[in-house]
Amino acid sequence: SAERRLETVTQGNAFVAAVRAAWPCAAIDRLKSVRNGDVAYPVAVAVASAGHGLPLLASLDAYGLTFVANLVSASVRLGIVGQTDGQKITAALVPAVQAAAAVAEPATLDDLGGCALRSDIASLRHETQYSRLFRS
Image 1 (cartoon, rainbow, N blue to C red):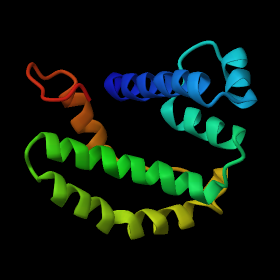
Image 2 (image 1 turned 45 degrees about the horizontal axis):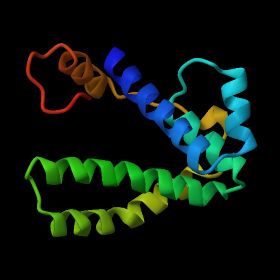
Image 3 (image 1 turned 90 degrees about the horizontal axis):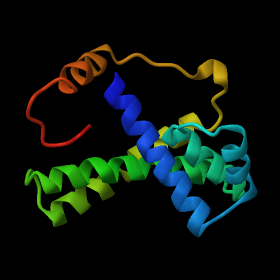
C-alpha cells in the first residue's frame, strides 16, 4: 500500500541521514550518490551494516530485535502492557529472532519471497480510515 511504502522510505531516509551524521561510511555516501531518491529502510540498514563491516548474522539479529522492540513499544504506548512486561516480552522473543536470523543468514535471492494477503488488505483499509492511533 502507499502507506507501507511511505513508512519504509520515511524510516529509510531518516536512517540514512542519522548514519551519515553519526556513523558515516563510504557505502552510505555511495548509496546517496547512485540513488538520490527515497531509500527503503531495509536497504538503508543493509548498506550501513555492510559499509561498517558488520557480520551478517549480527546485523540480522539487530534488525529483528529492533522490529520486535518497535512493536512492543507500540503496545506499551497503547497501554496494552506495562514497561516491565514489555521488556519481558522483548526478552522472551530474542530466541525466536535469533532463530529467524540463523535461517535467513544463508538464504540466497532465490530463497526470498513471501505473501501476506490479509496483512496487505488490512494495510490498504487502514490507510483510508478517518481516525487512526498511528500513522502506519
